[in-house]
Image 1 (cartoon, rainbow, N blue to C red):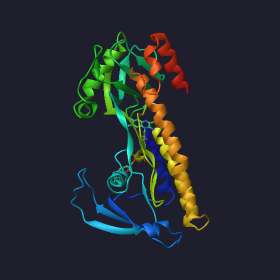
Image 2: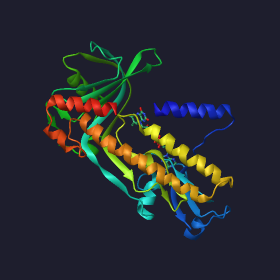
Image 3: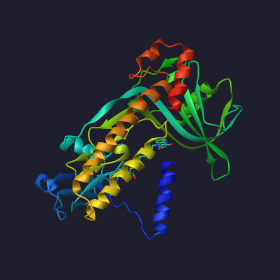
Image 4: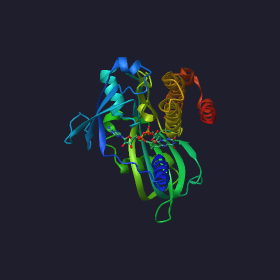
Length: 316
Ligand SMILES: Cc1cc2nc3c(=O)[nH]c(=O)nc-3n(C[C@H](O)[C@H](O)[C@H](O)COP(=O)(O)OP(=O)(O)OC[C@H]3O[C@@H](n4cnc5c(N)ncnc54)[C@H](O)[C@@H]3O)c2cc1C
């Protein structure tokens, strides 16, 4: 979905004569602290190294390095943000949080089923085979209706896999996800006609310690907050992060506001990130049949009470 929305933005920009190109990858940055603190509009305190082409996870690359001096650097480079990672190693940034011991699969499928709510948003908590979440989607290119399925893949017959989700994510196959769905949907039948896309991801909630470094390097979106996709909040929050930052930066760069205005970005958006992470910790744990850390009293609830509580949290 996020990809489709990004495409819509890109098409609209093209209609208006602008094209996004991505010839470089981020490598590193250094900050001149004195210049960073100055309100001088001509200061370029950030020196960024960019690499033509891509940089691998261990920092190696084939392409040539280009150095640019800039007033500001914005890391909106996703959950594995290289700008954030560099900040973690060299500029005191931390990413707090942990991973739940739950592995989920996500996939877009065309299915045949007698499950009556397949064209509705539906949460299925099976007795002992894990949970699934159904989202009806648009038709595929062959005009067949697709569904998005989020599937808990590490529970079989009530037994949780002992493999760490980070390791298991690379071993899970589309077939594993489909098999898990069949077990969760039982006694309804589920036949997979086509797999359009799939992925596997461990659930974790992590939040960056601050959204900026010296009010000159900023991070936004998944670079700052990573969580489960269940509540559909990641892209929404990323867009508002970006909007909050860009209107302020526009005012500062045009000389209409003092650079201190940019400090309010961290003040305003970190709180929202924290809210999102706290909510997701509770929601994702309940979804996976676990007891949320924030509400340990769930452990003492009856099945009926947990069900009611889950619906209340979902409404929230
Ligand atoms: C299965 C799934 C379903 C989801 N469903 C929803 C939903 O329904 N609603 C919702 O709001 N959110 C949803 N999300 C979350 C949403 O996709 C993300 O929160 C959102 O895409 C974050 O946007 P972003 O711009 O921060 O990061 P990304 O979309 O990850 O974009 C990062 C960009 O940075 C680029 N990049 C990365 N590294 C570098 C580098 N070193 N140099 C240069 N460029 C780099 C990448 O190529 C990419 O273009 C879902 C996520 C998943 C996985």
